[in-house]
Image (tube, rainbow, N blue to C red; front, top):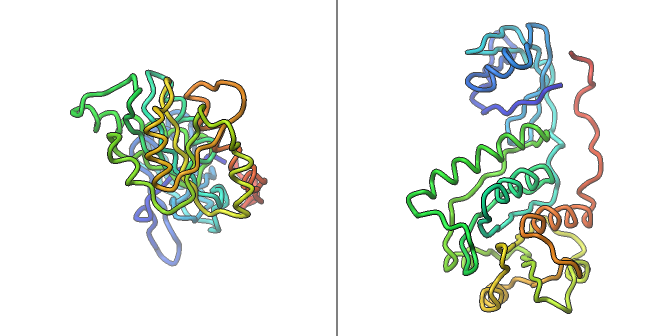
Length: 260
C-alpha cells in the first residue's frame, strides 16, 4: 500500500471513528498520479511511531479524506539513531548523500563547512540550500517507507561543529587513520542507541580538524584500505553501523496487505 506522512493534527474523531485529511502535494499525488479512488487503502504515519491503515472516502486533487481502519506501531525506523555530520559536497554529490542516507536509515543530517570544503554557499543562501536539501530527504523518506522524515539542520561553519558533538558515541571517518578500523571501534561497544558520524569533504579533513573532533571525544576510524569518494563514505558507514547492531533485520508487517 502507498505510504504517506501526516501531521497528528490531520487525525480527527468523527462519530466514534477517526478521520484522516490529506491536502497539498500528497493529495495531488494521490488523485492525479496514483489515480486513487474511494475504497482504496493507504498507510499513513505520523512520524511519531504510529502507523495507520486508511480507506479513502473522498479523493480530489485538493483534499483527500479517509477513515482509519486500524492503527499500530510503525516498525520502519531502526533502533540505532544515526546523525550524519556531512561536510558540504559539490553539486549532486550532496543530493546523493542525503537521498541514499535517508534510504539506508540515517536519522538526521548536519551539513557543515570545513577547511577543504569546495562548495561554499554564501551565508544568504544557507536557508535556501537547507530547504532544498530537506525536500530531497522528504521525497526519499516517502519513497523508502521511513517512519519519520529526517531533519536537515542549518549549514554550520566549522568552528561550531566540534562543540555540537554531544556525549553520544562519535566516529569520524578519516583516511589518515591507519590503526583503528570501524570494526575495532565498534567492538568496544556491545550496544548503542545513538551515534554521531562525521564525514569530510572531497579533499578530506585537515589533521587539525580531526584533532579538534578527537578532543571532543570522537574516535577516528578507517573505512578500509581503498579510497572512497566523499559521497560514498556516509551512506556506507551508516549501513555498516546498522548491520553491526542488527538494525537491518526485516520487520513484521503491521497490517495485512489486502488493499488495492
